[in-house]
Image (tube, rainbow over all chains, first blue to last red; front, side, top):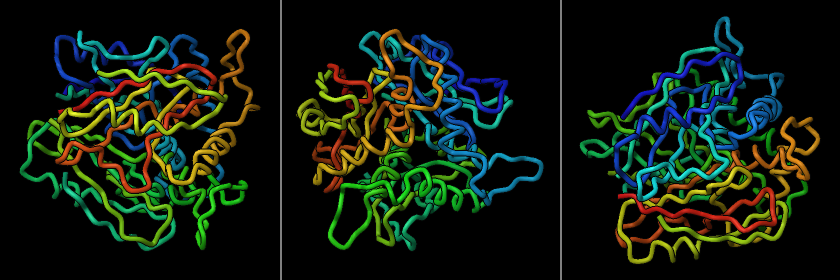
Length: 132
Length: 132
Length: 132
């Protein structure tokens, strides 16, 4: 299990971490890669990395799908992050990506791996594990 | 593949099953654990287990994201569970969690594994499989 | 890694691919199957296959959860597919399904594996990998 450190800059922010995941698995063999977030207000998704506006659209969409004003019961002193929790779970805590016979991530042409911050800025961890 | 039995008590209910998953994998070795729900109106997520209000917030949020009054076409005699199906899929049918070198679930400090009931009360199954 | 080809017919369409996944893994042994979509406007989910209205309900629900009129920033010439991207990510790019001791998909009685098209019609790929 390899650990990446991801610094985030905004409250809600998608960050392309494809390069870091690729580096973490370089030279290792297996059938798939598990990418995992050990946080409860951040998630992972795979989507288009060519146009950065797609990531911005996700940030807007998640804040609209799960809005601030729903009468949340979870309250942390000094924080207002209740909607961050379901936003994170809608994206999900993990990705599993197959490896090609050459040991490369089998990402599609337009696909990038995105860390999804919903309660930043923070420094976050991501675990990368190669599955047999 | 180990099978857990989870009794649920309410129509929509998140239940922390971290302890049962931990017991199911005790003494087994591998790189990750697959937790899987063989149902179509229940799912799984990972989120905060410290404050039980987070689970209550999820129950409220999923019922708002996918409301009852959307003109559903799926009708079962005596049941009104059409929105339960997409609610379950938004959380997802499976989780894959890495194992540490010591064989422990690599859950973050605040993370718990939650069974997500969307058509209870029922007795549900959860499958636990260790991946190599 | 085995590749399936899935032709789709509508802009938003769920298609049961359980049979194709079953064929792809026939005679192979392992602990689980990874099903993966290398696209950014399509996803995968598991849900009820008995009543086809459940799939139709998903199509309606995803178009309502992520509507067309949210002021999207991602614009492709000649295409209006910005909301297709988050719809795909809400379903997710992959599924991991345990295998029984007999090497069968451990799907529940009502469960089918659905390819989720959000920008069709197209011909799509799905990768199937058996995990050890």
